[in-house]
Image 1 (tube, rainbow, N blue to C red):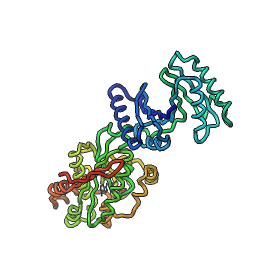
Image 2: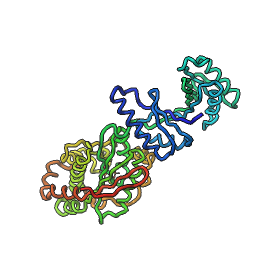
Image 3: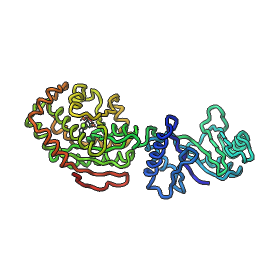
Image 4: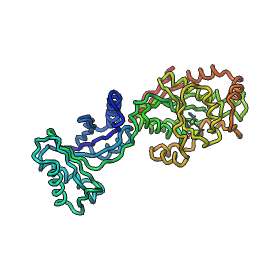
Length: 398
Ligand code: ATP
Ligand code: MG
């Protein structure tokens, strides 16, 4: 008898070539996610995916699978020889091993191998009565059982599935191309990352820092957030852009009310350039409409004016409370609320415009050598790669 996990995924909407790509990507992501568990195997058979535990404990593996996008359902399962006594024993053990213990159950058997000497109906009865006879406080409920014990009899073995736990859904990371996330140290942008990852985008991230106005710890906090996000993303490359000179120049040469708008325009120009260089096809921010003065539609127009690349804003329909809830759920909240200042806070003007104009922003930028400032910042960008296990490879790559 051996421990298995059956993985259900959103196969219904998928056909032909897409389906193959989806499945291959998913299986690859699951293998990578579980790579620290020795001996575990991930297989695709009969159009389904199984994890073979080979002696590893069930619980921690299930927890890992709950962070793999594309996984819709997770069923702990057992495989035994197709022999009635062995199946009975396995069914009982499975029921008794569940926490909390189900109070009602039914058996749903399927005899795929017609050489097996009992029909599906007979198997239902044989297993049901064996469970009833050998356990306390459990009864059969054919309409709304707490446990639907599925039994599938095949020539090469019988599979028994217990509870179906929910996975995160979505699409496997890497199946929808690559995006460039603008990652600040706040609560929102890591949550925005979660939602684009959920739709299958691979993640690259960019952070602007204004050392020495912002501390090394502020940068460390962003690196910690990137590290946490690898749980969902796998590998993440973080591009750290020195932003001090640009901010200093904006402060000297532009009116303070436009400081934030012009700063954001620079961030977007640089992010776009880094996106092109790294094969990303969209930018992502943690903006939510109307959340703060700088997140108005006018402001979004002024920001979008400098790029032709789509800017995805996955949090646009969410309230701060909802965002915070997701942030706690994905494990970034505690790091996000650490008090280290961000480059926008340090340079925060007293009264930013809430309705910046596109034309006005262009006019004001005429006082700056935009092209040179962008080029210099891109050239001085450092790249750090994060993996699930450890932070690796640090290099300057231009
Ligand atoms: P967050 O919680 O993500 O910091 P916020 O509510 O503080 O968001 P803003 O400060 O207006 O909002 O920033 C809006 C978005 O701009 C952020 O979600 C992020 O995507 C991007 N951004 C802001 N500051 C930086 C930065 N220093 N580096 C990279 N991206 C940034
Ligand atoms: Mg912020």
